[in-house]
Image 1 (cartoon, rainbow, N blue to C red):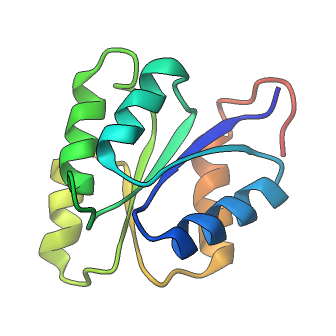
Image 2 (image 1 turned 180 degrees about the vertical axis):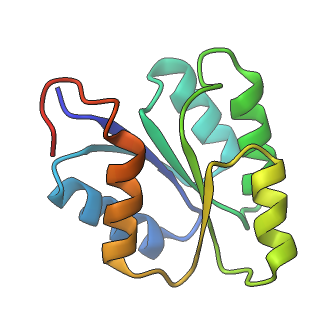
Amino acid sequence: MPLRIMVVDDENINLRLVSRLLEMEGYEVITAQSGEAALQLTDQTPPDLAFLDVMMPDMDGYELCRRLRQNPVTAYIPIVILTALVDENDRLKGIEAGADDCLPKPFDMDVLRTVTRRFLQDRDHGGTP
């Protein structure tokens, strides 16, 4: 069973780009275009890792991160914030919200692969990508 990664971004092009890369690496990818949709997905099927965009219309990525951390089912999922915001205070906000890492957009695909592998290396379910 492949490891499951949730990607949350309101911009369809970013969602497709990140999803496609992760699928090519052998991961199962679930996607959401809003914070509320992401919360519903995690209630049904908790992922092994989550990538969250910061700027979304219904709930920003920081709030989504906080809510995932408050839920006992998703509290220990590694969370990486993806942000176009470049100020160090924005990165700090992500860490304070409970994110394990923050990647600035645009990001290098090799960096995304490396970060993904780092967080999933101990969560192998029998088929390491």
